[in-house]
Figure (tube, rainbow, N blue to C red):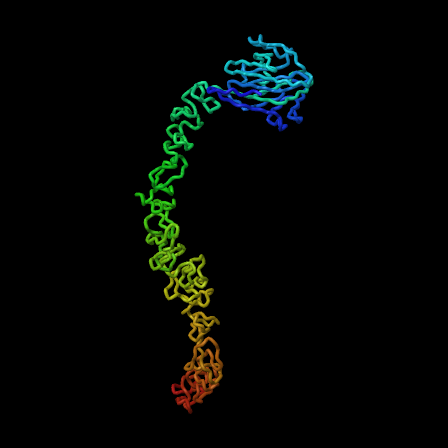
Amino acid sequence: MLAVLLSLAFAGGSWTDDFSDNDISDWTVLDGSWTAVGGGVVQGYSDSHTGPDFIIDPGMDDGVTQYTVTARMRSDQTMGLTLDYGNSSLNCGYFHWAGSATYKTNPTTIESNIATVSWSNDGSTWYELKAEVDKSAETVDIYLDGSSIYSGDICDGYLNDYTATGEIGFGLHSGSSYTTQVDWIEVEWEYVDNDGDGYTEDDNDCDDDDNSVNPSASEVWYDGIDQDCDGGSDYDADGDSYDSDSYGGTDCDDSEASIYLGAPDTWYDGVDSDCGLDSDYDADGDTYDSDDYGGGDCDDTVSSVNPGASETIDDGVDQDCDTYDTCYVDADGDSYGDTATTDSASVTGTTSSPISVCDDASNGVADDSSDCDDDDATVYPAASELCDGQLNDCDSNLGGDEIDNDGDGYVECVVDSGGWDGSAINGGEDCDDTDADTWPGADEYCDGHDDDCDLDIDEDDSVDAPTWYADVDGDSYGNAAVNNTTCYEVLGWVLDYTDCDDTDSTSYPGAAEVAYDGVDQDCDGNDLCDLDGDGFDYDGAECFGDDCDDEDEMVNPDA
């Protein structure tokens, strides 16, 4: 095998495949069937020719100036070695059996170097095929066992159609079936230091035409040239992977590697390490600087705490940095406030350990805003309902006994000692709120109902209670002088009071009068003493008149 040529101005590399591992996975097979058959030999078979039969990529790059390919092969048909590096017209060569003029149709001016040699294609004789390419001189020399047989440009398009820069193709060029074996392949290449700076492209010289550009050169920043060939941006002087913002990048200080967009920021050191273009004294990002550094933010670790923040009621935290917590006003001292607030409660907690300070009725503050009447201490949620005409427990329904259902000015409950605060009424303790004539102090009637709500029914003082008169003699006529007022009839009493003698059952209005007995039976105020009706009483006993004949009207003192 060929040794690699080395000098101070050259450097290179090599690639060998002796197939001892029977592995051809790094081949690109374009035509035929190539397999490892053992013993370090690879065998191929094909019926046609459409270009290279297989391609190898030894890893050369554009910096290669010279390379040599050697292969040990044998075949029962025409076999060849096709070279291509860069797909340019003079960077390709083709080795094949002499006498096959089919592949010599485009000779160059150096075709005079062609020599005709007869080879055996018995399939058993091994041949070493060797090709040397000098890219700088753009020439190709091809050898068989040391003898030159062909040189020139025969770029017929076969390899150019299939290979990429730096690949090498092998062709078995025949129009009929063939079997070819390959024992080993070796590729060696060299690089040239074109600019004389001691570095070739293989030594990572990224511009071998400029001696100021090489891995040892000093970098000139921001000129668009990678002088030291490190592959990094020429606009990232501090090497933090962020270009300077003066050249379209985001690094606000390209002289310090710890400063770049998104870098960890050390607060309060005056350095904008993360290039956020914000204050270095505003750690929580709420646009207010810490009060430890001249700002007004009383807690620079929490963005919701700053002089412009909205205060959260009763959380023990001074969100707006005025040294107070906000509470609900409890004007009536019942421990419940309404929606009115005050900042009068001094903060005793911290943002991380808040302490409630609003549940303090003695200071007129509360932590609750559900009081529906903060001017009345008897009104608050869960308060006991009182008979005062208002919603003491702040629900939506007034107690049924606080409603004057019959409109008589009285409710059923006993009005609270604190007074009545609802719609105007006359009082409470209405014993029948379905009857507008029934209320405390109403007129009592003989109706079988407690109209005045004194727990008594049809009392003697009922406005319609009748007066009853004693009927001692049982003649159904009562004595006006002996009477009683009550709603109910009592035995021995009657509603009539016209009896003129309640001891005599024969005396009563309308009774038959007995003449001259001295008794007023018919209660007209007189005894019957003038029977003849002449206007003069009988002069006999009990009458004391002067009519001498009371049965004849024609006989009287005036006759």
